Length: 127
Image 1 (cartoon, rainbow, N blue to C red):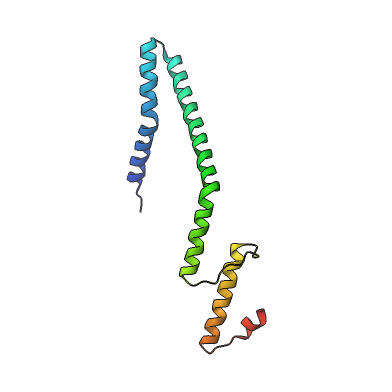
Image 2: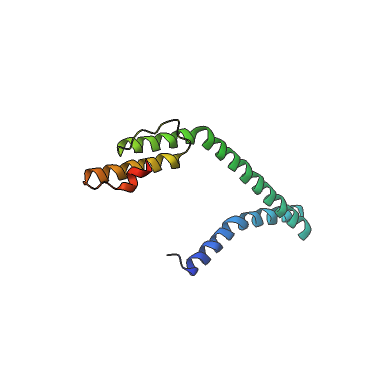
């Protein structure tokens, strides 16, 4: 459970990590160039703009890496999990993962009903 004091500490820490370096850079730049408050604010705005551009570029690169590499790796992990846990092999003609898992649940339910000696009329009527 996260308490208000923890959230407050995290907010203060994130504020400091985000803004303090920019304030220091803008302050040193303004002092070195002997400029005023307007130039200090302009440097801060420029640093914020660079930070946003960097964040956008980094997000784009991460998404491209995920699309190119991680989908295949994730798909392989899921397929290995299905094999290890003895699920039936998924067919390529299934339109969605939801339909595959629903068919697994239906088939597992029928096997349990047949194995336990109880045959439900509803389950045989649905197929």
